[in-house]
Image 1 (spheres, rainbow, N blue to C red):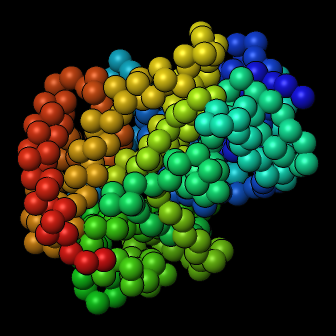
Image 2 (cartoon, rainbow, N blue to C red):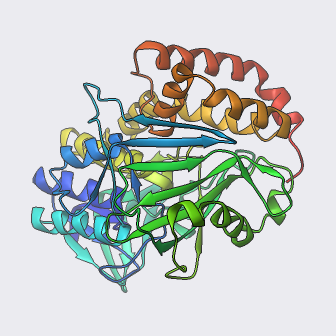
Length: 404
């Protein structure tokens, strides 16, 4: 069997690639190990950037809970800011539990003409260094382009040499759901001053994401650059954070067992002959907030757009254009994560992050993934300056990194 595009993974990135390719007339086949309607552990928050990408894909978002802004808390300082509307992104985000978001996206891919094969593992087939398609369910399917949308690195990444860069940071997160009378709140809430059960400051944050359906998504995330990361107990960290927010949010008991996941923030390769990696599989996760759905949607659409233009040059042009869009900001974020791995810098930096309204607005744009190589104004200038300064400091930051 031959298809134009084979997609490994039916999450947001893979579905976006399938939608774009199928709507452009390509024959598309998508493979996923899970059954239809599977849940994916996630924070469920969608930035204005993600909403913009979903609008580009013409996805009906009436099932999602509308979010107007972000409430940032650092020690006793609390700032509540609205998402800024720009020419590129809408002035609102959303919370959309992944079971429903992923179903809406893959349903749109099927409607566009993509064939989806569930409960089937697909692995790339090789002819030398070239990926020629996939093997799935005992069958070989050749493809002009294989799109890897497998999330955190696994067997497919190992086969293609697309694993995480060993000395770069990564994140871990854990979440659960609880009932709350504030389930219809219009702001995401992020507590930037997170501490473990021993009172140790954590480079990460705790979140309360109201889902609008009677529940909130409550979770915490941490970066690997902190001392003692390997011994960090995520369940205890979540319990510590829950103690803080239980009363103000009127939380009921956890509705399910807390579930953790890994956040890849780098990849050794994201393209080769006959293949590209998109979304989390390409390490496209913001180190400063752990968000990756928007990058997954954008990179998936981009890969298919370039394939439709020219299948032969698509992988190389994809890597180049992804680099132009995201690499500078994500590199700055990774360097920043080494910076805040030092506790005294972390404490000072967090006070500054929400210390004034002007700086808090820049923090808001960073937390909302609204900053990249095309960002104008103060946020863009701060990003460029930070990239240069952290570039100079990076060797020292890595050398003095505390043992995990």
